Length: 502
Image 1 (cartoon, rainbow, N blue to C red):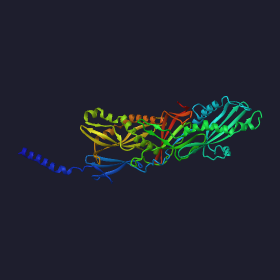
Image 2: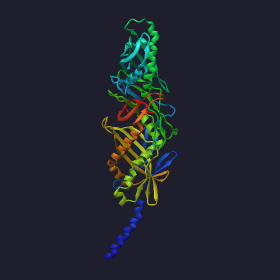
Image 3: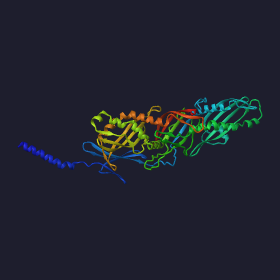
Image 4: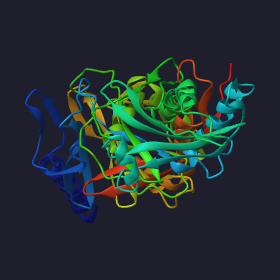
């Protein structure tokens, strides 16, 4: 009898479970992508991550009994967007006083090269009544403003800033003091200099004044300014040259309708734009507007300030050229997962290299910059392959001006495509485990970013057509300034002038 009663209870429980269990199943979360926008299948918590303007991420979350949560996310670029035809100013090239003149017209400076070229040009020159050329004395080249050099106002110029060069050309019987002022003339497509010159002759032996006309002091000053000074200034101040990228793509910079800035005896800065080659309004980079730039440190040779708009335009071009996808593949994050001993032994899942579906976007963060990206990854389980949508974030920490930028893994979420328009939660526990092991990716991500920075900015030689000198960039030290919901990246460049290579 007891056995029969026990059996009846088991059967009753089994029948009851079969009847009740379907009714207790929690509704499944999915998100349908419609022309009107994403539509969740059930009531869900909704929140947003990322930045606007920027790469925005909408997440729908349902919480179940037992502490389980399931989420589906969709990324989209939020405007306003940058206009490829606008050529907005998104950065500036800063040329420090040290590159103009280190105080002794040393090698690698504009003053040093100017002195060398003048002496080479005038060596052996002899003028009747004046004698042979001997040397250049007291050569100095400096950034200047009229507020700090009021005597220059007699030349009837009123620029906010200019380059002032002064020297004495010593002949056997005559010393020719030269003062040359080069005033930047910036248009939307070129940089030029208006040259104002003075040359006063003092004759040691009382030679008559007609020698002034014969020597042509003002013409002499203007000639040297044109040949030895403004050409090198254009090379140093001009926007960065086109950078050839692996795979045949090119990063291009250009002039823009901004203003030249000058700090007396300190630095001069020229704004530039980033040329955007794409036209698809759905993927164009976001626009935040001008950002504040950090103060220029004393002793800097050359620096580049790039606003967030400029950085996001560069990321857009790198994404458009598929270079970022190649760098992701080289970083081997998928290989590290697939070859992990625990994964290889316990799981049948394998990942393909991720590819970026949208251009990644940088935004300000507490410790520097945050980069968000929306990628696609093929997830293979035996004969079945599922497309996963990866929402990821990287944190860029600028701990010290000369220290490497630390890059760490921030956000990481995964949504799977049941169909191209139906999104569902997937592999939540696996993603959580990967997120907890984010520190393992820190070193590889830092190295990958450092390599990308070197490819774009380091070991570059900048020169204009027909110029004997070029600006050589050896290293770049990054830092960042975050203010008022915007940010700018400073690259202090170890750079100097050198003879142009054939």
